[in-house]
Length: 171
Image 1 (cartoon, one colour):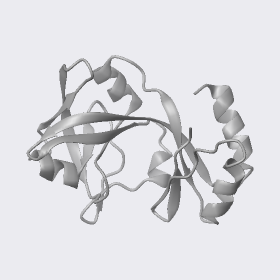
Image 2 (cartoon, helix red, strand yellow):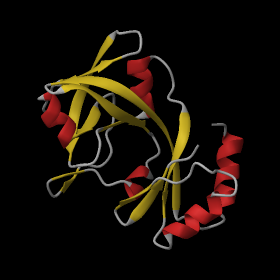
Image 3 (cartoon, helix red, strand yellow):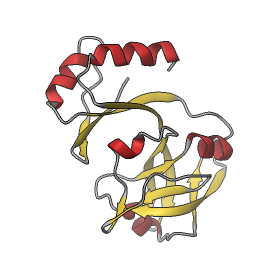
């Protein structure tokens, strides 16, 4: 997504959102004790992500990962038998395996997620993440945000609550 497309997206929100950050998002396979798991890999270096997304372990706010390490969801850690300090094996389309250090494990019971910085993504995958999604927060009406985007972005239908905010997938 280009800077021009990001600017146009923000204009389409027309003040309906308090925060908007753009992220790279891809799905990759991870071997686990119960078979191959699909994991959503989220790459972001915008510090405002902490205003939208809360990554917690028990009651502790982990913040967003820094450096080249990765945070993974508790469910993924359980399924794969991993802990902080281990490496997450990721199978690429080429069948090559990456081993990315796990620097945090956060509570999440829906799907499998892994978060890292854009720089970390580039370090491990050798390419910049493709910015094709947005996380949007509002303390107002989720449906107003969706309505602001629907005429142009028909695919903006996935919303979830984080810290009283909503996340909407763009494109």
